[in-house]
Image 1 (cartoon, each protein chain N blue to C red):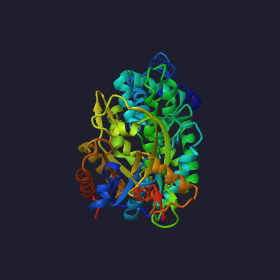
Image 2: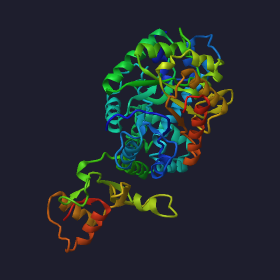
Image 3: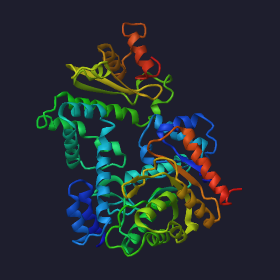
Image 4: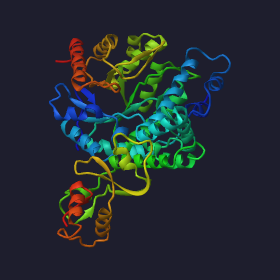
Length: 237
Length: 278
């Protein structure tokens, strides 16, 4: 068997799209050697484990919610369907889960998922992206230079108050509905953070992004200092 | 960073104990190995840890995604990032496994066995040379575990490894645990296997633990190295007649750092027994 034929035969099995028995027949014919043909199944299992590893860690809360509401088989079915729609493409394992939130949104009706679950997945994705965001030279010397928004800052809209829900103890069954804007950023200790943005936060961020002055002794002065202390804003006012 | 060669005994940098390793004396750690896929695409704390480690120890990347035996073109993003990492840490070489790791056009994140054929030798060797040229550093290939022979074999494993290393004209990372695991799973003499390898090409050694599942041993990198693997390690050093930089892998169910350091001390003691350590 030439390499090209070998890969064409074994790849669908490794991707979870073809069963073990038919792959064994295609590789070895009817006289499949033991234990080699039986042990081929090990690789099918390993590759399946890696598909779940690619999403289980980053999306731990979304997974927990889906398992609680729809059961473990529903989560497994969704993950396998996700990787059929979005095959692995990146050598960094977690990056392969980049499209899970929109995928869950598209599947929500068919799988009877509450509307907040795709949003939860998106929030978890942005937490992960914030943690690993590339370093930007403009973030060095955080107290120096003009007032600016740190490179890792991301502002995302959500239809439910996921932040307060996630941080509450005990946690209710579902987050309250309501439009929120969540700030994601890496703080001065390089830890990933997320917080609901207040109206004052937004006013200061808008002013800074437009290059407008913010008076430190004015009504937004306290918010300005809070944002600087958190590492959302860098530089001097 | 300028290139620093490996010597002595090394440890894989794992997130579970990276901070503890960097914050303490870490006696017996001579160099560090990193799994680049777990570090090189990240900024923030990950980058800081890598930089700290590379400042303190010679460091080398050992990847799992080169896909040297695969059909798809070598991954440009991966090779570019590896080249940047090699330069950043001053690595003397980069290593990966003689296997394939993609299916249907994308990675599957596992180390998969190649058919032991002459076509696979030529194919893998050519891609190893290409990877070496694109990373601009020497490539080193590791013998992988395999649980099943793929169809159409024209060579046995030792013959396949030797032929590929010769054709690629590259160094070898000899994983002693993998030799042991394969010998148990496929019923061959591991010392005779080692004796057939081109030991002059071996520039690094791995030792690790494993897990027995039914009638198969799985290369899990869990737990301490067992005595038969230490015995094989001693045999390898004696045959090679030199101390080859040796790394203890402990990648799952990772214990506290002192436990891992005890394994490094054990490697040193075995090397002394093999009379290759002054």
